[in-house]
Length: 463
Image 1 (cartoon, rainbow, N blue to C red):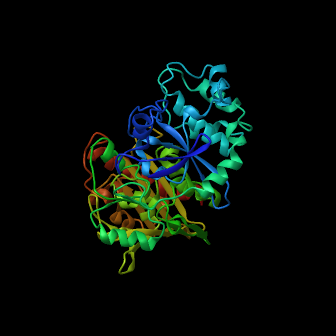
Image 2: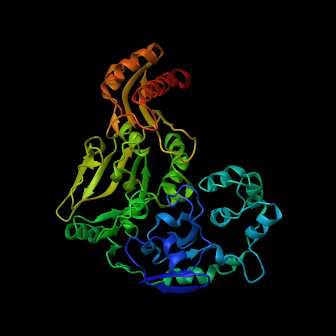
Image 3: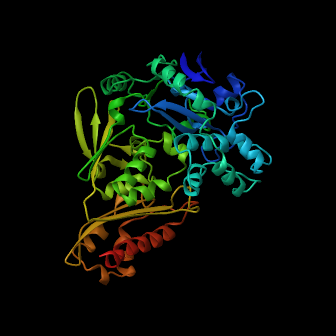
């Protein structure tokens, strides 16, 4: 049984399975068909809905998410807004009226998703600028209208006194008192403590651990994979802690990429902010977590190269022990890690040194919302005009994210102005990347060498 707030009241429902998505629940069970299925993989935004939760200060937090990638069991304890909730009788919501007034809809299939993404933005930031609107709508695709009228509608709609503002007090009270279930669906567990999580992993070593689930849920929706036990990290407060003290970052495994991006901006960590600006869409970042990204162990994941270059380490927990593993030692092979069947990632730690040169570059077919062919993160300091502590993390260059160790050795204590592209290409010969649809091995080696050369020679410009 799941309990949630929708359209002014608390509702309770039973769901079909532990892998049933929120999109399937809305369309097939509740017959709320305003939420559309487009790509069913988190790329088009047609299935966007808004989730509302309370933050640490008990203020409402509105977030747009892809309902096609969210297990409906994780709706438990939250508030849900779909396009059916916006109008009051014949009175349209200000965003709906603005889409009409500024001709922001044609065929209309994508429109509910656009409006819900815009609603989440306007409730958090009543007067967003064009850049913020562009980022918020980056995960919504339109084939016929063009984006200018959509952006204009979002910019000019006044949502400061909409129905959700009027419902705010009752919504806060409802969220405070909603019953939250540790086992809302058969085969789906949502423990509230790290200890309970470890016990569940010991009891169900073959279970699937979801920390966001934006990648694994595709196995359920597109691969039709079914598993007996899913365990979610979402309700574990200890895994949502994020602290930054004197450049030392400690990030809970369940901290969303949206929160990390906000912290990177506040902390002036430009490389991480830039990386996450190109990491999927806002809807994905609202759900995806750092622990999930690392645990997924994709060789083309964007975050691992930067964390390798920062010499990150992981805290792994089980019922028996807590241990620390360097990220460099965590990736053992393709999708194979040092994580034991009864262990979970609880924390990720890294240090950002003041004055260090830290760069990240992602090469992909599209600028936004695309998988990288090559990702390069470079980290070093300069001492009397020479490179020291050189660390280079790479994605898309091997079966796992790797450090470019030969390159690091070759250019340690070297004047960056003397480094040539040919020297870097020669040092990269240690790697044998695969060829696939995103790029041939030769292409990857060429691009990687050029990006590293650019990162190292930037030292001269910024020194």
